[in-house]
Length: 455
Image (cartoon, rainbow, N blue to C red; front, side, top):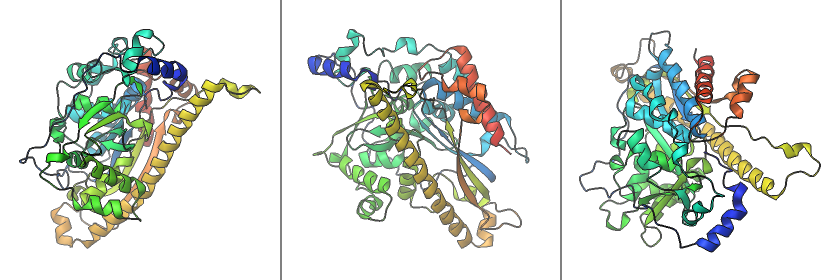
């Protein structure tokens, strides 16, 4: 999450400002970034197209962490583009899917828009620009108090419109190609993960394809108070389609994972105009800085043992799926650990905010690991239900073993590097823009950590 304790350290100032100035702010553009779905709009695809995945494949989760995380995850993609497997395939062409949060969403979205062959343009488009200088983020400056009272300092013009113009070239979600790209935020009314993916927009009766990529990234990176929430409209009142059957089943299922039950219930809320007409999205790192929580919901919604992020032919040809979490978070240095007096009041609040975010992230990761084991079992059962002729039509090689499939998860981060390099990176601040030398350091770190993991 971008600057997750940013607002905590000025809590008293913010509270006083909000009380005194509430209702006095100059309104910014808070119109919904989505539109209702037309009756002709297609329903969710059962699975992505067959992408020719085979053998060992990789899925990537890019954490939050501002420009530091964006550069770190970009370095991972660059190395995967340049490294080849034993069979000559580029590793980047064997990426099953990418999920991103906040700073990691910047990189994931660029990959989705431009693909593996235009990765190099990302640095000039975003990382080398002084975007930070164009954003008003000093909470103690009185000029920021009035917009702060309305929920945040920076609105759509300074965030999403800038990204749309300068980085993503007016691309829409329909322009994403290659592996599935998941951009993650949090919905404030329900407190649930919100993924810019079809099940969430089906619940809103909205057209995901028409959403700007920049608006999805802005929602994922909208760190509290410094950025205004991104607004979505809920169009359930005039929707011509009922919620899919899985929503009601999951909402009532006492044995379903809690994230599935609560997300299903939030979808029911989205269809009820008496409860909610507008959604307000903030930085997904508030509840899951690895962007893993929504994957279980996607699987439940897809109704496929192997999907919906993988095509059946890809699953037949795979022998291993490695989900690699690329953790670009910085360390929290707390000098009061050396004093008998301990933290002051503001430091206690900052530590609590950090620990709450870290606990949510750890719980999401552990839950995902458990879900991954079930995903593996379901995929093996489906493969073994195929006849040999069916498997061969989908590309099964000679000597194919339906049970030869393994799913795993792991985290790579700065602590995997030599001590001096790790120390320097763990102290790089979480900002929208960084000096060239710190960008270079993070990019080279991304290359180094993934090179250690590729066989």
